[in-house]
Length: 526
Image (cartoon, rainbow, N blue to C red):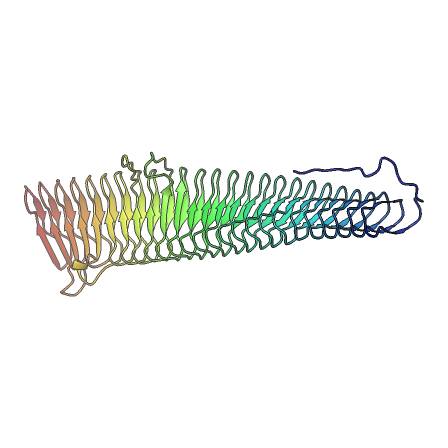
């Protein structure tokens, strides 16, 4: 922070302290001093030195590089053209530097300081000050102590620092502006310029991006609230504390919660990315397309939105590093082409109503595959895929058509829903146990296919399979291993034991077919 102080006289000039005066310096380099009255001083042209020791004074520096000290009292000071050095002194002062590269210190009191069109440094000093940057480039505003209000201008490379206290900082329309709240519970507002950075610092801060592109918001310590704007390539970074980050409507906005338990909410923009990072975070996608949510290393809760092509990843890990996942919950929205991946840990994945949603419980990395005991639940959308991974998973189909459940390795439980399709060749609902001793239970939909895979599996038909003559009905395939197949109550059910010693039990349906295939099988008719 820049601090300055200058003393114009070693002693007061010999003037009456109780008389209000009008003093005009005219042209030339003048030295002017006034007493304690309410004086009006015009320095005129030239490099003037003006000191008003007391009273509510009005001072005009004029053209030239002036040095002005308002002294005590509520002063009004205008520096004019030139590179001026102005000090308001004690009292509630109004200071306008004018054109030129000015340096202004408000001093004690609630001051109002206005920058000009040149490079300027404005320092409010103690108490509640209002600082407004001008249109010049390279202007620096320092609020100082207490609750200050700082306003950026249209110039580039402006820096606003609130200092101590609960400050309000508003960026202007210039590019490369930096807002720093420092200490206190601050409010920072971005503008329409590009490459603006807002840093809340310590305290519970509120940061709101503007409409400019390439803006960065950094919450700092404590519990902060960050909100994106309509610009593209905006980054919101919560840092330490339980933060709330809300994306705006701009495309390609990135939200990072960092440490602690954060809440991240996507907006309507496309290609937004939400990263929970450390802590138990809640991430909720917006309505934009191609949004990506990544939870982090602890137990996170992820919700998809209504946008298409959204991707939800429960564990935050670089694919080239060892993953460290938590027990996550991922919930798809109503958008199409959404992908949910639980990764490491015991995860719960729930599909939505969108078409072509994919749910993955497995965790894959460049080095190895590490799986948790996951629960995957399909929604009402069509063309959904649920993939369990390498541990003991629970997969539950929804009511959508053309859903595919793949248990993967491990002893899995797969439960069909009420979905169906007009022809089994188009898959309908498919339950594939994969490796391991699996349990597959058909739902109420027609055209369901249950395939046990390798291992001693248990397959149970359901009430579905009541379609017309062309649809297949429900189809149960044991594959390798000593399998147990039990037909349901549906009209058309087909049981195939596969290799090894299988047990097949018919149900009460009108059209049921049992084929033990290879091995010493037991077939029981109903």
